[in-house]
Every structure is written in structure tokens, then in C-alpha cells.
Image (cartoon, rainbow, N blue to C red; front, side, top):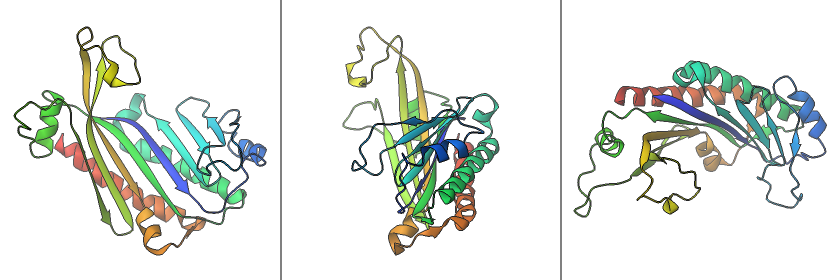
Length: 241
């Protein structure tokens, strides 16, 4: 298994004027992130749309800040692709830094937060067949062979949503098109097929049930509970491989 990337996201109801606080944001994140990019989006446009984006000095992560959310995106390479504990430490530290920033910007509490991981599973045979075995078998569908597959489920545990998705990622020789349907299969062969699993764990279920927000002081408990379950689910897939 190889870890591809991760995303941390936190949503809040205390709308912040991101553009007016741009200098404060840039100064607070200056240790790890470079110059802030302001996006020319009207204030009355969708509140969840990013207003500013910062990229880390080493290029491994980026931060997008909207009026009601902060999103951290991290790409893994080197020793991190096989070291879940290292990725947990990195994401948790950066997430706490962003929560501290929200406190400085006057945000009192948050609605929910969560972490998403994407990782590949090494197939010991054609990926779609191996994926079928991992999930208990596909069998024949309409008398034909399965070319592609996508499986997903959502369950709740305590205050948390657990979203799992498994699919096939195909790359074609010499092809770089945004719409897979336009690939010329007669002249371009698939050179890489991978099983990609997505784990999305968040405490949105608690917010949907009660409508109550969490104080920023509670954040460390929330991220620990999310990561405790993420570790468990990731270990489950490691054993399945």
C-alpha cells in the first residue's frame, strides 16, 4: 500500500472577512507557507469558495481559506508514502496551526472537522479482479466481464461518519486528457491500473444530530478521535492487501 495524499477540513459558522485579514493570515502561517494568493471572488459569492490559497515552502501542502472553512491538502512522497504515523503527525500539527489561526481571526467554534486519505492497494492480479476478491466477489454482470468498478459505503460510529470508497484508477500510455471517455483505446493502452481507496472520517454526524457547534478548545479531542478511527480503518485495509 502507498499513501497518495490527505486532506484536513474544518467548517465553521462564524464568517470571516478573509480578504481584509489576508496580512494576518500570511503572517501567522509564514513559518511554513509562502506568499498568499488572493482569488478575485465577490464577497456575495458562495461562502465555501476559497478566497485565499497558500502553498508550503517545500511544495508538499497547500491551504485554502474561505469565509466558512479551511482546507489543508497534503501530497505524500519519500518515506511518507509507507508511514501512516508520520503523515498523522504532519497533518495533526498543521491542522492545529490552522485552528490557532482561526482563533486569532475571531472564530469562536466550529461545526465539524474531518480527514480524508487516499491510498493505493497493490493488486496481486488484474486490479478489477483483485478488488472483487477484497470485497467478496463481483461475479458476472449481465453475462459480461467487469471492466471497471466503484464501491462505497457510509456508516456511523458514535459521533463520526465513516466513508469508504474503492475504485480503479487507469492511466493510459501517452495520454493526458481530462475526460477518460475521449481516450483512443485503439492506439493507447492502459499502462497502469491501480486500486485506489478513499477513507473519509469526520464528526459531521454529531453536528447534523444536534446542530451544536464545538469550541476550538475541543479540537484536539476531535482530531484525536478522527485519527484513532482512521488508524483502525487504514490498518484494516493493510491486512486485506
